[in-house]
Amino acid sequence: MSSKIPTLDFSREDLKPGTKYWKSTSKNIRQALEEYGCFIIDLQDKTPLDLLDQVFGSLVQLFDLPTQTKMKNKYDKPLNGYVGQIPALPLHESLGIDNATSLEATRSFTGLMWPQGNKHFSECVHKYAEFAAKLDQMVTRMVFESYNVEKHYKPYIESTTYLLRVLKNSAPNNDKPNLGFVTHTDKSFTTILHQNQVNGLEMETREGEKININLSSPSLFMIVAGDALMAWSNDRVWSPRHQVLVSGETDRYSLGMFSFNNGTLQVPEELIDHQHPLMYKPFDHIGLLRFYRTDIGYKSECPIKAYCGI
Ligand SMILES: O=C(O)CCC(=O)C(=O)O
Ligand SMILES: [Fe+2]
Image 1 (cartoon, rainbow, N blue to C red):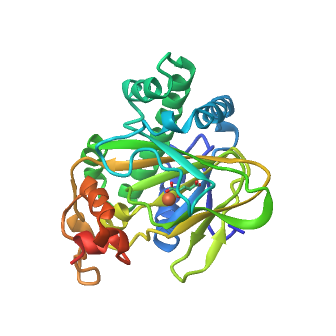
Image 2 (cartoon, rainbow, N blue to C red):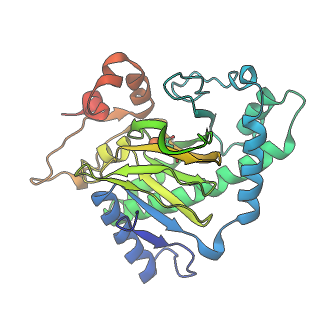
């Protein structure tokens, strides 16, 4: 059950900067991120149901393409392209669209997958990316405000881009939990996860308790803090370990929207004091991905601490 992890109502009209509800929600976000490193957003009647239907329909088409085609999804940035055909993870496949809020970038991804073109795919995926980026920016702004460092929000957002990963875990057609995606922490600043209502995400608490996340309504979106946010917050926010376990007869499709800063991130000085001595050196966020791809990075217990911890 995910009952312990807070679900916050993002459908209210008064969720606007400056209102009481905005302030109390910001406080709840900060609390959830410090305690669990994640929380659930419920958009209720504000959920873009048509768009979500179109996106998930498009994902079925995308994953049905030949493996050779999907393998063309490559970027210079590490960890951004096609993942699949891994013997230990036979149910998993995923692809990445870097800078997904740019129509040009989604078009160029689409052109690789469908050289003859697929306007419907590029348009609906781009629309989803814009929608998820807007949600992420709202959450991020509330995080910055809750720490009284809102002056750093604009420069942060101006140098942030989004990697949209689309994931499929094929139905195992059995009832036991099958590993869909290995335990990891996200390397992003923030992540927004959404799924086709087939559950499977399992989050670990600070104490090591594993919690199955119930996202079985299309109105639910999971926000996860990544390693970069944990470091930026000087270890106030928790970057939770999580994995995907699937069972049953229905394929699981999910969307992960990851924010990455294209510059150097550092702990705001407001978050350093006697009780919270500086724990991280300023770090190049994309460099964290490169470090994670090295043997030392991949094998380290806590990659962000190994990368830039003090
Ligand atoms: O499929 C999911 O819901 C989670 C995927 C995930 O954790 C990731 O891609 O980092
Ligand atoms: Fe993840």
